[in-house]
Image (tube, rainbow, N blue to C red; front, side, top):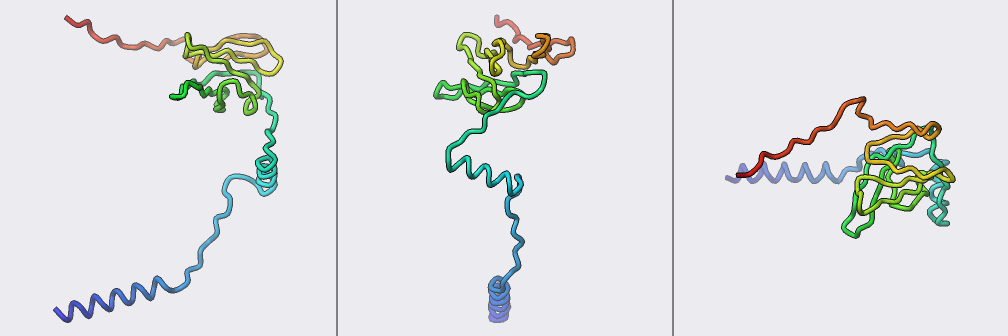
Length: 147
């Protein structure tokens, strides 16, 4: 038993000594933005300045709508999340109706408002709509009738 205690004491002592030695740590730093972009973001944060955005590209899509327990909605426009009626992130104002929760009225800047369902894309120049199903359909199975 005393041999075991000596071995255990030696092991614990060696472990403590190893932990006490300084270890060279590599500093990761910031991972996502360039130093210039970080300075700009920090300046905007401290001055509470929002960068004005405009919708880029020829198409506009409504990718999703989520209602929070507070009743406010978050919408995804061209894969960018934003709160309802906040156009600062995408340049598009979105109004979600309680009657049709799977659609929203989108207004990009000074353009004509467009009603889109979740999953729809519209060509802003021609007005042509695409459901992204490629001519297919989505079928939801219905449960069997109860007897």
